[in-house]
Image (cartoon, rainbow over all chains, first blue to last red; front, top):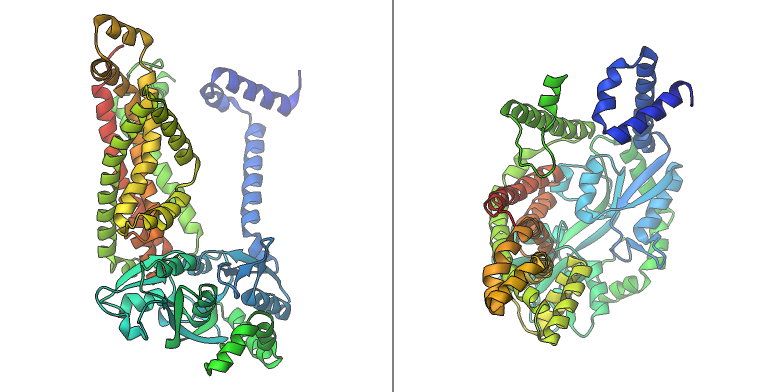
Amino acid sequence: MIEGVPGRAARWIHEAVRHGFWRPILRLHRLKPRGWVSLWAIGILLFAAFWFGCRSHLQDNRLVVGMELSYPPFEMTDARGTPSGVSVDLAYSLGEYLGRDIVIENIPFDGLIPALKTGKIDVVISSMTATEERRSSIDFSEPYVRTGLSLLVGVQSDIRSIGDVDRPGKTVAVKKGTTGHAYAARHLLSARLLVLDKETACVLEVIQGKADAFIYDQMSIYRNWRRNRETTRPVLEAFQEEFWAMGVRRGNEPLLGRINEFLKVFRQSGGFDRLAERYLAEERETFHRLGTRFIF
Amino acid sequence: MNRLKRFILLESFPGDSASPRWPAVAGNLTLSFLILVSLFYVAFSQVTYQWAWGSVARYWYKFVYGWGVTVGISFLALAASLVVGLAFALAQRSRILILRYFSKMYVEVVRGTPLLVQILIFFYVVAESLQVRNRYVVGVLILAFFSAAYICEIIRGGIESVGRSQIDSARAVGLTRTQTYRYVIFPQAIRQILPSLTGQWVSLIKDSSLLSIISIREFTLNAQEVNAFTYSAFESYLPLAVGYLLLTLPISMWTRRLERKYRFET
């Protein structure tokens, strides 16, 4: 016979298992005061552990960065699954400047702003365009990339500009939640809109002729054309200029100020040139040759 | 103590079709509803979230349109999957061996792979090679064939649960194979089949949300678009949940009525 509280707890569990739970629960009214105290103590301890466990990332020094790791060469993963790319390097440089550890969260693009708003991440560094609509939800840093929207069309297509796309009978593919999606929904009122989850699906639709054009940013259109030279053609002149910036929660002024300082310092020390050298060397050369402005 | 027991517990043995008295029903139903609501309330109040219903309300038409498309697609897929599922179930029990094996293989492959993969392969490879371009047709077909595999197994289980003595008696009386199926096996099999079948239908309605990845403008895609435009995740997705509930609850209630109707002793 085990004596004391552990013994009684074990017998209680045994009876519950054997006779069903309601009988021992109904007999709890016979529990002595110290029994109730220990029950409450256990409950409070569990709750506190849970509570502090959940809030831990707010108290320590980590900066949680959200990005969608499916946007090479800015946000991608290497062969083993660790995040890599321009934005990842930028995030780690930011962490060095701020003196904080960086944790990278892989979140689908259209879930980044909700994640920021609910506090799951602290900053968004995901090649996100700073638009007026988004500014009503979150705050943006100073821009660090200047780019624009371009088109990817089928190799047989005769589309030369965005005006050729906005016709009845034309189909446009866009990636959900991007500025291409917003532009198409607002301005392309005659064409049919195909909203897809993934960039690769959009390109596939253009290749198979199900879509006449894919609206996306200049750099990615160029890279997708390079991968599919025989089946697609890029229309690289940007028809809408865009700036990428980092996003922080509304009202997070201190972090925003520090990020802007960091961007200034990073640019002056040639950080962006190093990033271009490492990830975008070929693109930079091609853009210089074509006379198009490069992004940094 | 007894009064408490009468309120909290159901007085019956498994197999009885007892129902509780109305005070117990009303009291316990409201209590469980309140618990559920307060759980949600506590969870949501912990999250520092600024609700913005106004910007989402502007897109009400998208929600209604999407809901309509989901209803249409689910209904068509449901009907088609019943027919195809029945065909495969009968094929699995057929005397022609190739039908048996083909049906078995089909069921294993379809049940064992994710619907996402099936949608992508079916649409971008199979339908493309057959030159079927219309997304909605392809979507309904994919859903129908996916669900048919599950329905085939459900029907087969129901058929095989009919006692051997029934089939033997039918043979003894002189019924042909078709007549046995029609007059002896199916009426009894329906009892077994109905609960799982309607469960599968509810599942089908929810699985139709996956068709959004090939840009079929159904309910989920529209809610996701509203989320993309307004950056309000909860305000976009909660109506989505309510909309699906509106579709699935009537099916569950209709099931219960059907089950009671077919509840005869064997």
